[in-house]
Image: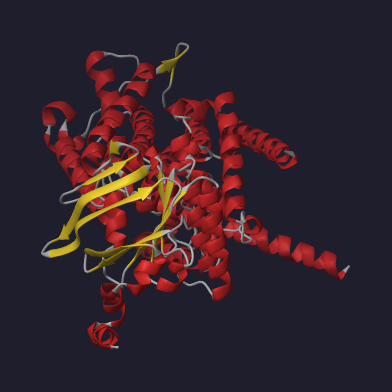
Length: 262
Length: 331
């Protein structure tokens, strides 16, 4: 079943067309990859799909519902969790507090409840903490041990993981990961790949952006390739790795020409 | 669970200490000098202003420059209702709060979609506009001279004139306590987490499910409500309200109180208010050099305590704890 379907999505910045008429879909339970050289429009695609940018044409359908250009918090509530490039987190908070923010749209306590500290709020706060701990445990990789250290004192990798845990805490049906392995060493990359599989196995569809081909080829079932805002290929990792246009986009025209001759 | 129970008893202990200070301090101050009772009242008023500004500035990260004129709006609302319509002063306190809150909602709706310095500029423009109105709507506000005399209210037949400063102090401290209580409850909750998330990163907050506009509006309106109440108390105590009572110098003093005390802490703004009210009195001996010394003092505080006095207190606590554990190790 198609969980998310994108039709003719376009995003322009002035004269620059960052995403140009892109069509694709992601099946439920799938591990779907998006790759492309730097500046090919991957992050713009994420931001346009999640409401951070307003689209300039096209449609995003999620779970049978048109979600194009809805505000980011509404899209999040509908079941799309996401991380940002560059390990965006709430810097003044601890990982646990960061992840508790992620529970926001699944909880209800409002001003009156919190001022009076009603039993409802107390119960909800306990649940929030428990659910946040679950998300930290699902992420693993030592994050639980650091749960009370301010994030600004943690490594880049720990911050990235915190970002993933925030997204997981929002109870998403699909999670968008924007270059989660940036800045990781090979051991950590391997662990992160295990984590991504674990997320998928827990029933959450994964939409993964990466510019490094090798990391994505190993785990994704289907991959889409963007170049200069255009979709240039889509298919299984094997198909993608043999695709001439992809090779040319990544290695340059000359290399592509040589392989053609060879 | 054990940790929670411990935190709870600590919390109750802190509440009790707070109540004890609030009850005993005015009595001690009265014994020392009635003049300092007046200063104590001002500290409590600055305290309400600083604690509430801290909610939107320190916890939610929005540099709100309208706080001072909304204090003014509360003062004018209460003063005008008492003078022109003969409304009971005690009834005007919540009305002043609500008037400031409604004005806050209107300003917030217009400006809170702006980010960072643009929000500060927009609210600054609102401040200038309101000050012009207070000054030039002479038919209502009586211009630069201001409203006066605002009749003194009475409590159980006792008129709260200059001899009853201590009662004013207790009233102001009661509202300061209410402001602190609400702030404390709000920041340690789902709502407060949303505020902090907005302060740290608006994009991430939004994509993590926080309706940032709505929560900025909420934080802004809680803050302005208390600013309006502080204004009502101040104008009635003084028996007058003029544009000079809520101009940019007043706003700057409140901001200085928040920053020197410690942004994003509960007690910091109160400590900052003590500093802001007492420093001019202590430095009075310096006469013309007052502003010079005050300026240098501010620079020194920002360099050596960038997180305010509360930051300094926390640093000292950590150092002492570290030393304590080191001594244990050597033993």
